[in-house]
Figure 1: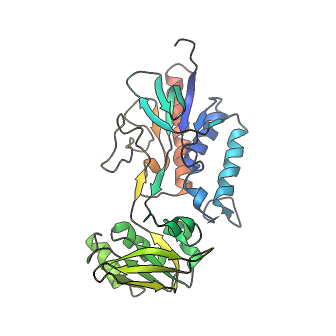
Figure 2 (figure 1 turned 60 degrees about the horizontal axis):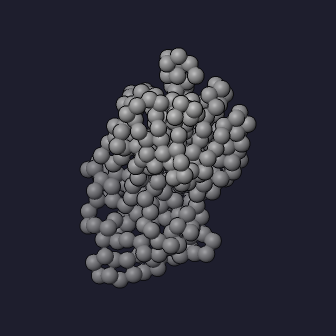
Figure 3 (figure 1 turned 90 degrees about the horizontal axis):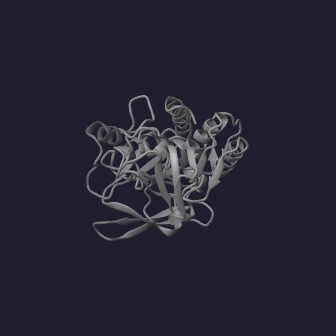
Length: 313
């Protein structure tokens, strides 16, 4: 036990938050160890063109951006493991964590495991993700200028995304499973008053059409059971929620009712000393690559300062 190596900083997650945290930790000579998780690179790996990340004048493909970030981080000595966290014992310090293939001890832990958008689970929906199917209107709405698109969902997120997408689309079709919206009253009013939004009640998508990109959707009327192919639709946006990837940590860390980890105000500190959370696993408001990266920077700086307060590393 006494001979077992204790890592200064262990980072779970390899999206913009995790890689930025690793970059700052590595440059502080903390020799971070990154566990890349079940989705190495995070949600950007399923995004085609990224035009809203600063520093890329002509835009950049999501996977390419994450590859460049990983190379930059590796240059400063960050180590990577293609593994995911399955649990952490927060009862004693240094903290013992377990992974699918092993585990270890860590003085500080940065959780950057992100969140996964909920999808309908359709085969073609997943195949065309990033090619007309999206779960982020602010990321991809621009690419559908002058086209008709559909949004699935009935809550505040769906109402907000439908409204945002009217800036680009000629018409937004909002498909709602029930006969009313779950969204707040003010969001409902905005949707129903927007001339560019058509609401389709008791409706859902049963298939996505197209070989290399979305060329339509199959819509089912949940009352009559009838299905129709809408070949005028060129984009499908899912707004049925996100699920934070926090299962391995919620037993010991404060979290909200949906699993998002809670941190101190203006900080990435969790309720456990030396444990920090950044990116989409704690952010259900912005969910952007740039805000995730910013919070990753915060987490690394806070981890470094915490280690110094414990007597260095």
